[in-house]
Image (cartoon, rainbow, N blue to C red; front, top):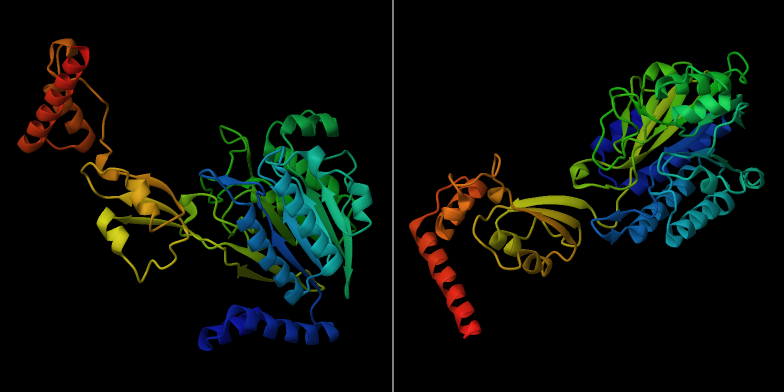
Length: 421
């Protein structure tokens, strides 16, 4: 069905919310005819409480979660899957805790949609898992710690039960201790043991969905993710999930498949580094029929402020318009000017109030810093500065700049003598 909608979306220019409502109308008809079965939204890596270049992103996260809840109200899924890194750190700020509480309440009570959530490597298992058994009765299934007898979460549709198998993030030593095994020496083996125990609780032929927080081999990482380990021991192979009809992954921040169409990362809700400026953030809508066949769609969400990189000269950045009307976006500027600029970031922030970082590639020299030769104590200040300038800029210090430096240095020495007189 999604392929038909994609075709018409390309030839008929309508806003995304209208297409969602049209699709929801037809989905309702199909559900009544029992042609569509289990439907769920897959998301991950909310990182509530994130600080981005000194800016607290809680308001931006609340804005995007409002859109997510509107999507839930339109699509009316049977479940929401959150695949880890709910918080950005193990002890989240109060504002992040309040935002999660409000979001979960709206999904569970207002939308009446159950939630299955696992802990990621950024989360504190104990804090995220508080009140788990009590909350499960309200439809919030939080699995934050592994145990030796894991149980799937079972949800039913028109075709019968679907077994959701949550695997929270756990270090191999923890897996060895909890499962009383000795061979879980890396993340791959630990994942196989955990998924194997869950699948042993599932009847043969049943439809299964895994939730896991891991780095699957071949995935495209970004610099906003915290490494799971060093030396490759944190990588798991996609074959760990080959016995599941769908696997909802968390950890990598870009939406992508991991080995097959049914093993996927939803990606983060927001861009958490400037390296992600060109990426497109989304949540994943999955439909599973009675035979476990999948229809998958990535649904984009629009942030309050985008994360962008600009490259130009100072004067051009101050005067440019048209393509850069979103001046409130979070920006990094590659400033191409090579000369000295007084308070460049202050001047740019008059135009771009959320400018967060400036780089000066024209002043980034290649190679190691080195002296001008000989004992530096016997070299004049002018020669030392000329050597420094050449190493930083890759160019020789021109005569007019040499003269300016000499005059400035002489003025400083004169002021120093007058102060001592």
